[in-house]
Length: 481
Image (tube, rainbow, N blue to C red; front, side, top):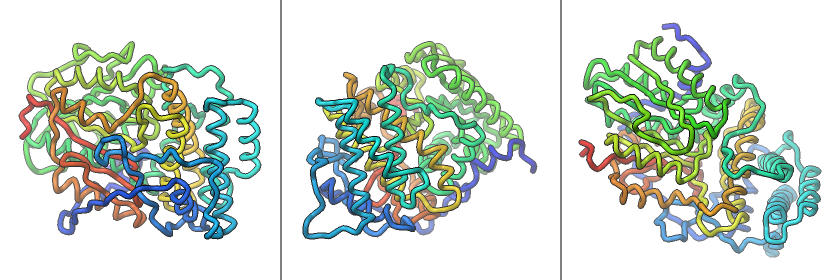
């Protein structure tokens, strides 16, 4: 069969062999947590990142969550200081020494730019020194990551008057859409970071709507629509339940995200509609424009008898930033639709309440250090770093800078309690979904792991660093068991 928009099809199915999991060799996996020392932890990770091949050498310790939330987030010790030195008993090699020096300079720049004694001139001096030490074409992962952070901090410094609610997590890059889509496909071939959330959420959706004739997915943030082609393919191929299932997707867009975001939502609809036609999947697409962050269920077109699915992909690469109040408003209204399933996927970068910008910066640096360490080497990596990861780092830096001065502190570890006390119940992760996630990870570097998050969630990790988590919920009034 000849499919239109081959680049779109390739984008979704470059690793589609992971979408259909064999459950014959599934093994349960649960990793413990250890206390961590920032200096030691970065030294272990940097040693791996500063090697020519970027191959991992030793697993860094886990960053435990010490805020009363049981093992749901990465957290950082606030005892790390830019004055801390390398252990005198251990003589670092030159590359490792440079890596630690870069980390200390980055932390110093972050502290100078937003700390109590912030001085723009000191920040400029530190960033100028960093620019002398790193470039995008450097040999090691750590040097190139430091270059992206330096660039992001420089842009943040230049942006004198940041608008507090101007979608800071949305990439402000100038790369052509074709390049961005190519970079997404390349990243999917280098890492399970994106597909982990998509595949686990889609598998849970397939199981929830197994016997439904009409499926209505309300997508909180669709971006390029990367998630849904594999779901369509699975609906066409499945051999249980109704012979034909109609799929409807309603994509939300907000005026606060700008005209470019609205155009992207419309383009995603065009691509998904063409793909559905090419494989014979009954499909309709609706675009729900919101004037504000507030969502009202009355703005939706509903059909009697359809199963409603709520899909929330939060703060993943190229997804727009929404405040906690925006998501709370959305989920509160969405509950009135009696959803059969709610999927919640987000990056494991904790923005814990009452923590400083420096704390968040160090957690973000550790997160991207793990991501860089985990990516497979290849001729396309430089392109992915330039088009995709650089803007990704920059947007996160803007976001945590704004959040640090905001009265609303995000803590995704608290979503579990909020959902349970506001009319939602957990939906167990199936054996097939766990095995599918582990099969996906088997296609990449050995350092990836999947961990269970209670009975209704899964977490993707690199070594002992959690990267992305997915959890599944339903309305307490739904028919799910």
